[in-house]
Image (cartoon, rainbow, N blue to C red; front, top):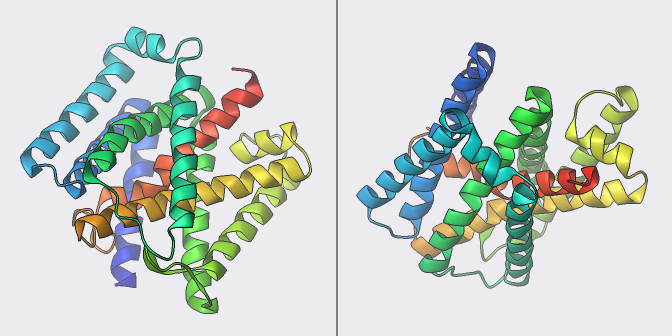
Length: 284
């Protein structure tokens, strides 16, 4: 199982790097396909008809790609002024509420009503897309990857940290395999890596560098902890959705990983949050 996960991850990494090297258009197309698959899977989990969910996924991916490259004026209208700030703020507030609900019901579990789950898909998936494209278009590839990497580091370290250290369960009623030791190793690793990179290359175009340069001391550390907490909450929310629906994976498109939503669940919460923080620090 681990070997299969590694092989799939390597293939995905090659596709992402290849698309980035080919052209911005290629990467945007790959990202649109991934986001469309994620949307389709999310709606399926919420018991939408598979055909309807698939059509919605295709249409959303096509629409978002159209906005990005065929109709940049329309995209500029959406993101002009406080547009992106409002989109990311709404998503961030909703994720904060979800995070609170998850951790208050971590032992008893949370049966998410399928209507609410589907409604949130229509909010969170576009919010994540607009956030990703803003980072990619306005801040550059390295900067965008630095945001995605927060989730990757937290996820990988939490997985191995939890397996090695064990200990008390973090959310037994939602995701029984997750432990507090895994979460703690994720917090520590992201904090340590962020500050080491800042001290080594403070001018390098990383989201964490921008954060630490604006907010020194405990403020930047607290925000990094919140970002990792949102990452965990995004993961746990998908677990709650799947438990409510009685399914193990969002799909079987990615061998060893399940589906695209299984890989992007934490990015759904982290992308809007990090862009909201960035815009706030910039004075939007």
